[in-house]
Image 1 (spheres, rainbow, N blue to C red):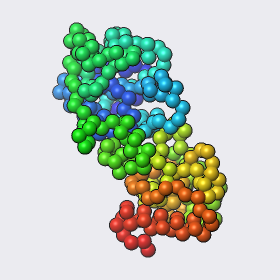
Image 2 (spheres, one colour):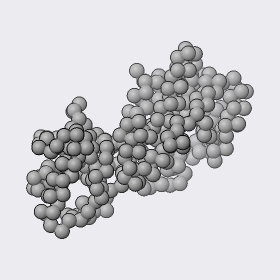
Image 3 (tube, rainbow, N blue to C red):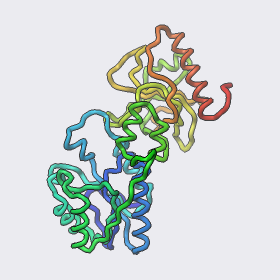
Image 4 (cartoon, rainbow, N blue to C red):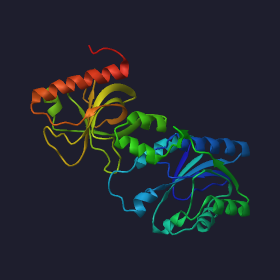
Length: 310
């Protein structure tokens, strides 16, 4: 069982560790963690993931617009599911930001007996990313820490990165995001009471208010897989500000669950984005909107099941 810890990692046995932001936990991240688990097992020591919250870029650049591929809760779940021995999340603040690589390793040595370090080939550590790979190699050599450098996971000849995933989502290209992640891009949140407009139109929807820092795919309608209570159903999900009725400033997530009409208010719903269907649009009449919802549902069903709409 993975032990989750807030703060510096702590262990009464020697440790192999990997360090990173792991936002989205994509295929490149997974490659490093699999290497970590292999090396820790070979050495007979504990495996530890050390990461940070908030993301250093968010903290240092004072980013207040949607940025994260994983909320803190999602990140905990993703890293805990790796089944390493320990996941430690350090609070990124001025004190941590001021540490150079030497200071970081010195602080780390106060908490664990670090025997091995696994990092990606583009990894850098410390204030202003001054801890380059050459600096880290010198520190590890001096401290007799074995250093394992993992080559980037490539897609289309380029390294998979959180930045590439953000770019794909901004274009509504959730299929490319899924290719980079190794799983569909998703968001998890509790279903809230809406204005019941969907129900009045004959299409009851599950409404979610996303974390304000969670990056949403380009506004529009998507074919999705919606999971709750241990079950997964197909759906059509609208991301945006509902311009036909409200045109709000805060984006809303509305999912039409196909072949389901139960009451699931307050349930935790995970929505996985599979295909972009169309852009968000303001309709002139309610009848036009109803026709479009019917088309969205039909297209989502066809894409996700390869079955015709009943």
